[in-house]
Length: 189
Image (cartoon, rainbow, N blue to C red; front, side, top):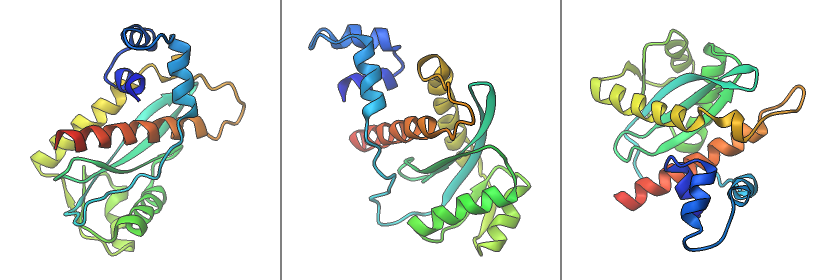
């Protein structure tokens, strides 16, 4: 876990292995293997009360294609409640994403950046929808930038060589990231 912590704190695999070697002799391939073997746990919120969902999406490059990363934050704990990737961004994808969120965490107001696909999706799901306040916008944008900074060199470490890839390795990596992110927030609070 400490090797994963070093990597997700911003160090490269080689730098993380150098720091880890002060305690245990491991090379960068060991850390890469730990990331590959990590068993993803379901993203869940242990909080009893969720005030609202802050939802946003961003474009990521994976291999030679682009995918949309959908992220939901809980504003008080700042934990990531859910994430998903899709190859398209439209009202149907937004509705499917929000529907999955509601199944796990229940119905709560939804705050978005004003994307045209959100209001109709919220209307179909009977969810209250509003545009981000300045605080909500700041929270989600900082989290999205943090995720993008960590995924910037994703293809260098986890290249996709499969034709017609279903992006399972990307989903696993992102779930590992969320697990780490949420544990770090719990330890701070």
